[in-house]
Image (tube, rainbow, N blue to C red; front, side):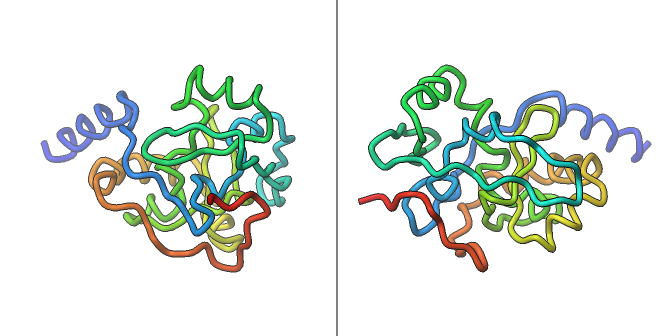
Amino acid sequence: MKALSLAVILAAGLAFPALAGEQYVDQTGFAVSGYDVVAYRDLEQVPVGMPQPAAIPGKADITVEYNGATFAFATTENREKFLEDPAYFAPQYDGHCAYGVSKGGKVPGNPNLWRIVDDKLYLNITRNVVGFWEEDIPGNIDLAEGNWSEIEPDKASVKPIPSFKSSAPVKD
């Protein structure tokens, strides 16, 4: 009976999209460290186990407010695309590390450690963590989705991204 109840709860949780919580914003003052979340869709995604192409920096004068944070874009066209469907382009788990959420916590997501899975953008914190996450992407997403409803209301991480310096703008 417990197993059936757990299965029903998990199925219900996966049937509805996660509500947006507090977006991770680092020292740049921008969501996703100032990188253009729409531009990820134009980058060539490489096979699991290989580093993804670098994210595209946004511009400080091409921005929009969403989910309590400022998102920057490389072009006005990308900003307009974002405005049409922000939830589609925004990273999962409010920009926090997907593997961290699968383990039950909110830690920063590095915009250069990304992967699009099932048309959703996921970020991770370090290359080592990417390796753990890629060992079982579907399983880790399932774990993260199961944890998200509990940790989503928690405050966003305030920790810096280890060994990362943004090439994107800094918010004035």
